Length: 365
Length: 230
Image (tube, rainbow over all chains, first blue to last red; front, side):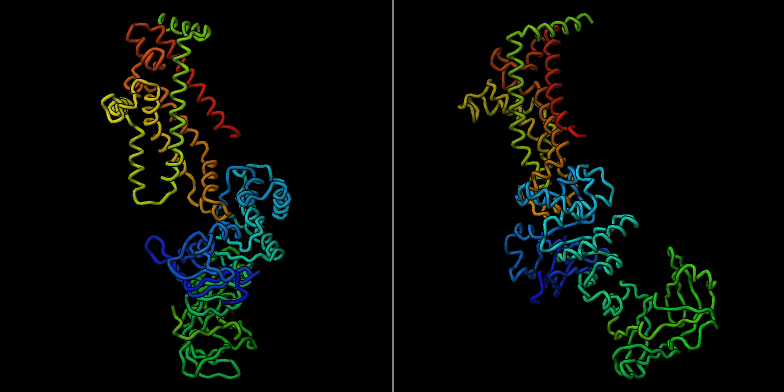
């Protein structure tokens, strides 16, 4: 067990409705960190969170806190050292103040101590003016702020968050995310958050773990997970849209030479000559040039292709290019309009060697 | 029309003259139905909560029985209780037949399924994740239950009103197990039946007006509690 771990989950298996929905080999939540577990819907994220909250007993495995098995001890005692925030605020039909105070009252904290603690957190979340308002009259953002304050006022050892921002509209979410990020950095409370939103993981996570089909595929810093996924399943989820089958033709000083179709490409990594690999690229790392416009002095990784499809996604445009294999690029809408890229246009695709990440072909999942 | 007017005037007269017999009948109605409702609450609130929140194999079956029980005909209840309390019946030695206690027993059997069923449905109408959220905030089992009751207080008060309404207005069971004995087991509904059968429509209307007023006042009180701050 990692001595820095606040909570250690080992060989956890959770069965719900007769189906095994979560199988975790090993997951530590380290003291003071914010661990964000990402995964698509149905990956087992909420199951993981409820298990960590002491609300869903695993069929097998162990969950240790301070060396003690949580599920064989007093669960009420354990839960009273955690704070839980779910996707919906689930406030009770009482005032904002009373909602925030509810967890403290459950713990038998006296009203003299409750008042300053509640008021402090109402202030921190910018909802002090709403203290006397009934929870039912709050907007979505105000309600979620109340729910977060209700959990943090408990001064929990472990804060558990289940997609707390996903039901909010984009501007409200952005503001609350920013405020919450600041509060988290000030309080250093150990946090486990599950979400399907990659931006939330990047913004809040000290570490990120990827959960797919009930199994933990990768855990590491956001940089590691987003730029160096361990398999194609993780790559697809973290937005690595281009995965090019290639063969290693040589290596020099940590730089691999790859043959992909008729192109020779370069990328950092370690592999043996002749090994079949997959070259992973994030769409934002790929640059497009109209045919003939690419400067000769630019990146050595250069391919020719034909635009297959352009799809506008707000301020960005996702462009799929056929280079003998599909390559996906993401450019701004203004660049797209300026360059006049249309379906069928011939383009040059370039990317820096350092943007690539190589996976062994066996990591195709 | 004259009969109705006469009845209303007589009702007012009886009310304001504090007629001893009418007062006794009214008081007994309130006591018997109030007690039956209170006992139904003691049974129905925990049982309804268990059926709504608990997880055990026969839960759905019991819930279907309770829901059927909500439509129990009072005369059938009267018959069953009579058989049990009849002198030669299994509980005959208790000598409860034709006593107010017998009426309370019958009315409790009528009201308890109503309170139980409506309590279960009130709690089931809450978001099921609320229980998890409360547990996640460190609430004990008792604190979770109390918080859920508070959240469902509007439909729970409706359950009490429905329970009280079902017994204050029933006549079949009270007549059968109470016997409508003057000064002993005569309640408003059985008195109304008696006066009507005697052709004393004015008195029957007067008693009906009192019964309606009583039901209204009790429900007014419960409604004002229910609708407070809404």
